[in-house]
Length: 212
Image 1 (cartoon, rainbow, N blue to C red):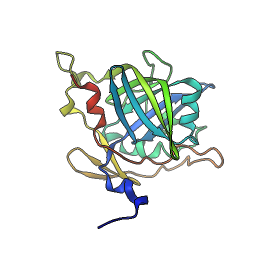
Image 2: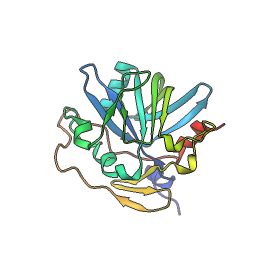
Image 3: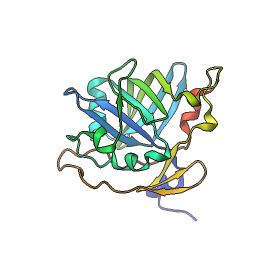
Image 4: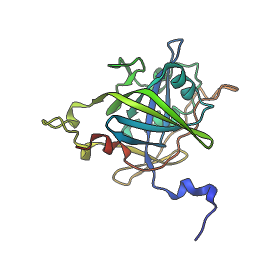
């Protein structure tokens, strides 16, 4: 049965959600969830993320030319969902119960609670309809110790991504559907809206980054 092409996104597999952390010129940390992303090059390692140009995250990336990608696990379900709805003036790490960790190569903080943190420098962008495809070059990757094999390979079978279906619904690798809770306080502020709730494209895109 054919469906309206406006519903195309809902006919594609759900994607692993990511949290993008940035720091603005006033040294305020920002966190926002995304799921339109993928690895697009191995040498050099490049990651593409589709972001609306009206978002705070987009403005900071263009201003600071960097960002950090965190791969959350199912235990961060509520933090992922609620990060799309916080007032950008708030202490976002504190509101979400997350811990900012100093990065290795850039200034955008890592998220301690994420199983993987990928530091990227802005390399290029392409206008794609109502979004811009932001290309980041990976400059550092931090993976939890228990996910790294003795030969320095990442044990991808032990990664536990959280994929976004729609709204507050997510799904785990095992097929368990989870529903996130709405934030108790600190919704989006009027004119300066935070990033939209995440949407989806291809699931498990992170695995390609660590291909041999």
